[in-house]
Image (cartoon, rainbow, N blue to C red; front, top):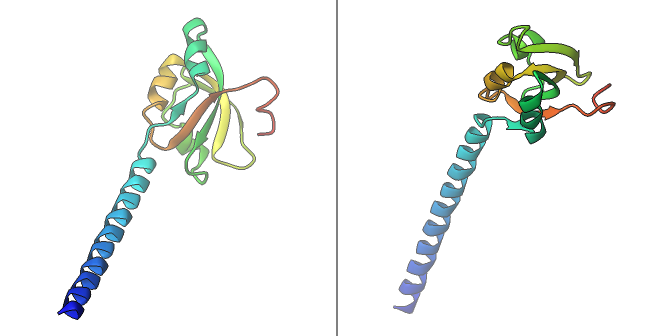
Length: 125
């Protein structure tokens, strides 16, 4: 009788731990999907600067560094973004952005982040 109870508890423990592992895998996979579709981080300094200026120098970093430049900034017109330089490592570029350009990019799930360029820091990035 004790052996049957012990075996039953072991089987129950194995089943519960298997279900817990499957639940954790499911959560991890959904987080990966959510992260790939998440909106970019916008440096508050960019938003603040655009309150007083028509355009701000920014560094834009994409999640995928293999995208062609045309695909990365193709949706922006010259009055929304002016390219200054691209990263030697790919996946990032620097330029001047307007409020209208920022509005477009802040909904682009391909972008990881947009930072205000600091004088002297962005060169050679």
